[in-house]
Length: 71
Image 1: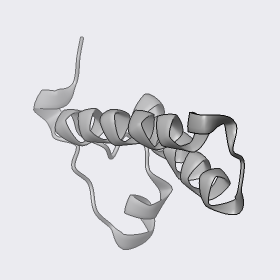
Image 2: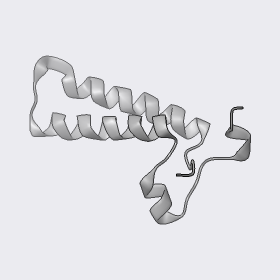
Image 3: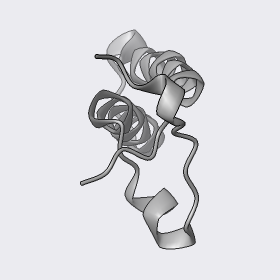
């Protein structure tokens, strides 16, 4: 599994993912809308954590640059 999510993309995914998860658990209301938003948030956080997005692979896109590597 080759990384295809760059550092800026990861940061944006983390911020948006956390916002979606926070929105989905507010007011303890678990309707269909909140569940969908929560699942999207978790997916964004997972793709940021693993630096891999399956959708990017399908469309042949990568925001990962060699300078994004940490050694």
